[in-house]
Length: 126
Length: 126
DNA sequence: TTATATTTGCAACTTAGTTGCATTAAAATT
DNA sequence: AATTTTAATGCAACTAAGTTGCAAATATAA
Image (cartoon, rainbow over all chains, first blue to last red; front, side, top):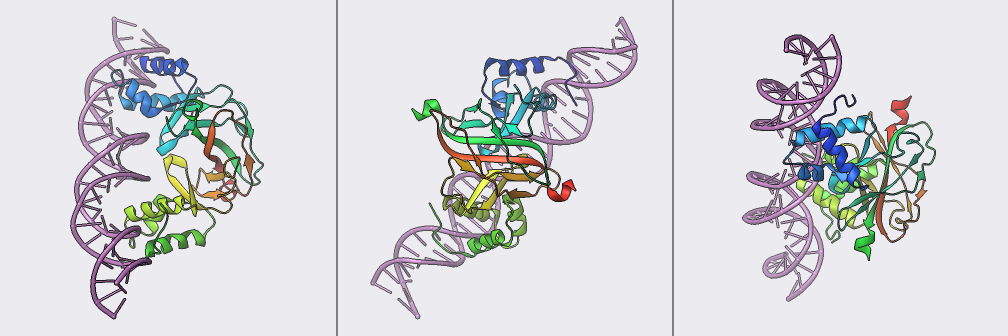
């Protein structure tokens, strides 16, 4: 599909992702922008930003959908992936800078991969 | 918590996992056993089997919860993990036999990890 | 400025998973 | 074997993330 118009909701959402390098859940975005945009709009814009390769998504605790800015995602997303870390105490999710390469899997076509590591973050661990 | 009693529902669920080596979604189990057990029961038994280390769970496409039998899970689940493969066409999920080791992550405590690879399975790829 | 095509908001809906509580069944005790 | 205790079950009502259809609003093209 792809983004076609630079609307207020697109700007507002991109702005949220520029403010922090962490991943943000759709739920959180809906809460933050509740007064400004309808949740339907937010879901739809997130969808399109993902289609455009601006964001990528993955599932965190309780099946919640999280989004993060793609930094180097677009290129070699098939054989390498960067893991996300979710703190089971505070719920925060970070994109880890490390890269993990996948094992070879014969006879299958890999399209997407996600590695979610869960535990205690720096703050909650200390 | 842990399983305490050997009830019909526990037997029936274990039986489902013995029949195939694939992972099975909670949704599918509820459908299969709908006439015999209430969905609440199925969710609760799955929960307990997971607590007991008999099954492990992870999130697949659309945030659905999947369960699979633990083979070698209990031991070194922190630094190694085996990936699951989900076919985006037919939806089937398999536990892959390969093992991936995680990168070191300073100052954080890893509790669980899951690596989900999505694409086309042997059948749908051919 | 007008025409066209996309985006938005709203309300109603879908559905996986949860909760409280009364009932039933398994295991322990006698 | 009968009874007591404790855990498991079914049911109905609920929760909440995410979706859908449609009319109204807004961005871009002409």
